[in-house]
Structures are given as C-alpha cells and as structure tokens.
Amino acid sequence: VYLTATQLLGAPPTFPTTAEAVMYVLRQILGPILVTLWLSFEFKAVSRLWLDDRFVENKTAPTHWSRVLDRYQHQTFEQSVVTLLMCVLITIVVGDFGDSSIDVRLPIAWAITFVMMRPVYMAGYLFDPLGTSRALGLFAGGFWSNFPAALYCSIHCAFGVVSVKFAFNLYVGFIVGMSIVIGILNNTVGAKQKQ
Image 1 (cartoon, rainbow, N blue to C red):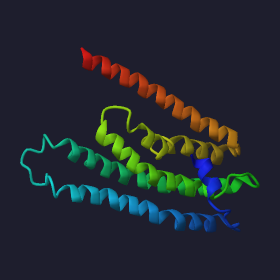
Image 2 (image 1 turned 120 degrees about the vertical axis):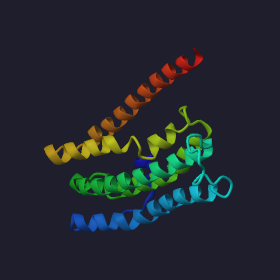
Image 3 (image 1 turned 60 degrees about the horizontal axis):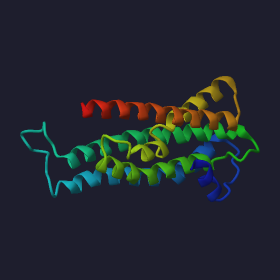
Image 4 (image 1 turned 180 degrees about the vertical axis):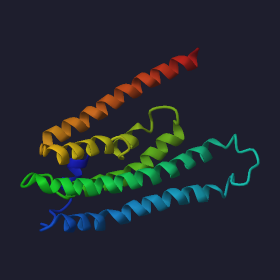
C-alpha cells in the first residue's frame, strides 16, 4: 500500500538538508493527521447526543458503541503521535537511500494511509470488536506497521544498513507473524467461548 501510494504522489523536490526534508513532510502530513484526530474526538462528542454517559452513576456497564468510541478516540490519539514521529524518522532515514525509488513520498504515503485506514479500523471495531474485522485497519493503518519500520530505522541508524529488500522483508515478516499470532489467539478464544 505504501509503495504504491508513493508512486501516485508527484516527484518531490530535492532537499539540501534533512531538516528541510522533514519540514516538507510535516507540511504535507500534519493537516490530515490533525483532522483525523479531531474527528475521532468529535465522533465521541456527537455520540453523546444519543447517549450521554459522562454523568452516569453506574459506569461499569457502558454501551457497546460508547466503549468502542472511547477506545477508538484514545487509540487514534496514541497512534497519531506514534505515526507522526514514525514519519519524521522515516524522512530522516530515506535521505540515506540516494538514487533509489525510496524518498520523502514514503513518509507522506505512510501518514495518508494511516488517515485513510482509521475509518476502516473503526468500522471493524464497531461491528466485530472481539474478532478480526478491525485487523485490516490495524495493519494498514500503522498500529502494527510502525513497529517494523521503527525497528528497521533503528538498525539503519545503528549499523548503517541501507536495504529496501531488508526493510520490506522485516515489514512483511512482522505482519505475517502478527497474523499467525492473531489467528492462534482467535481460535483459542473461540474454543473457550464454545465450552
């Protein structure tokens, strides 16, 4: 998704310094990320028109929608911060790739994909909060993709590894590994629920 999106974005200008590249990326991504963050809080605020659970004495049993919107709101806030920092780190690292097809379009695509996947995540969470329906939004929207990217950037900065193939394999390997773990956990939980 990210590499395809980078090809759809126009060719970026060249930057004499990393700081200028970071500022360019921030100008492109701050608006969409902040709009997504604002919308996540407003969804919860608007939901209070139907069920205002702020002043309910028995807060131990909020409605399904209220719990999901709370979690969506908090998780979007958390992931907005992580995604923003991840995009800055990716911008710093892609400057070392030289003439490759990896450039500052990657962190921009990373942020835009996060923004586009938030509604997918929320829909999956609303309709199947204990199942795997929210997995696509989590995978593509950064929740699990930020870790292998941060791991690659850490290896790159510590050891000077410059390899698109290694970064891609690390990313795909982590996603496959998480998919297997989720499948095993879902089967285990499903089996216990049937008993």
